Amino acid sequence: MSFTIALAGKGGTGKTTLAALTIRYITEVLGKSAFGVDADPNNSLGAALGIDFEKSISDMREGIIEKRLDFPAGMSKERYIEYCIEECIVERGKFDLLVMGRPEGPGCYCYVNNLLRKYLDRLGTNYPFVVIDNEAGMEHLSRRTTNRVDLLMVVCEPTVIGVVTAKRIIKLSQELPVSIKERVLLLNRVPEEGLNEKVLERLEREGLKPRTSFHFDEEIFQASSRGTSLLEISRDNTTYKALCQFFNGCVPVEVDSSLRSE
Image (cartoon, rainbow, N blue to C red; front, side, top):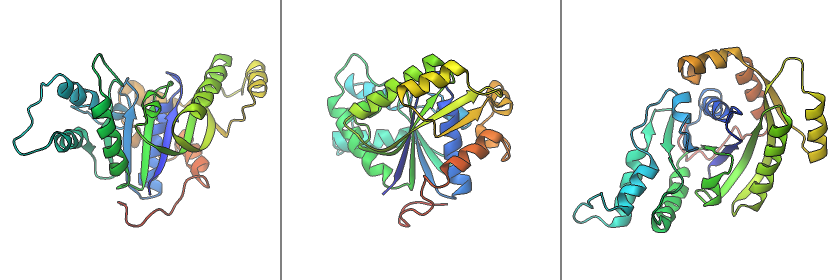
């Protein structure tokens, strides 16, 4: 069974950066393959990984709902939808990426969503690790795009508003119809001088204890500014090294040997 890691946080916290570095950790340090799911409507994970994508699930879904797609003779609608999903997957050897796109539109997607969930559950079992980059509202998880999450990483900016938002996200995750084994809070872009006293007070008031924190990273900022893949930054990058250290002990090194690995 795959180990599923999901990231959530409000826009601008750097969760997509951490999602990309998580995929790098899995493929580079653990030597395993990963299935990345970009479930944020901003569709930024591909760019962080240096990937251009042509199709998203929402494109496929809307085409089916609006009957702009012709079903091949002899192929059932269900099998054709699976084929369309496969066409949306970008393969990169060490990892594959699927972009979800917008979570919904004006049409009714119940039938397609049910098939999508079933297919993703089956597809995910082919990989040792699944990494899902979510929006703050975790719309795709709330619609049960997946049924189980082993590790939910809530990424928070070092501000009072960031802490309040993170608390709301954690509360929302507890109400979702998804089994979440472990939830952790990660502080990102922390100033070198440390957290403001008001932020510390708010963390204590909300009963939140960050599992780890990352400082503002100039190398990552410059890479993002240039549009460079985060797979190309230095192995000695401080954020990447801190993330690797965080994963040590909370992410299994050994997984089902029947699943894909490098």
